Image 1 (cartoon, rainbow, N blue to C red):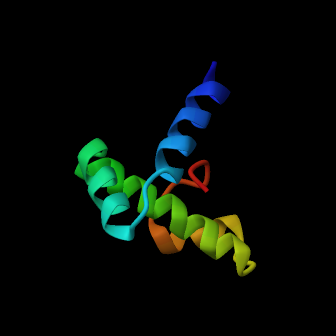
Image 2: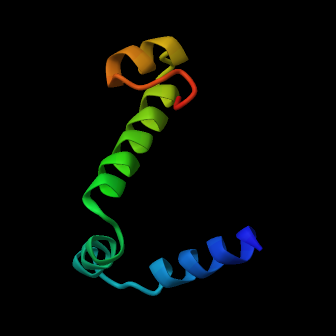
Length: 68
């Protein structure tokens, strides 16, 4: 079930043609707190990719280790 939901979301996003369309879409479906959470998750991914430890990331972003 969840895989199908992800596929629907991915297809919807793939059908957007411009950055503005994507921004409008995201602003329309996400709350401010969801946008903040998504940005924090993206930052975690970036820091993991550059080799930071889970503990370093948790401290830097002020999140729990389980969030990382």
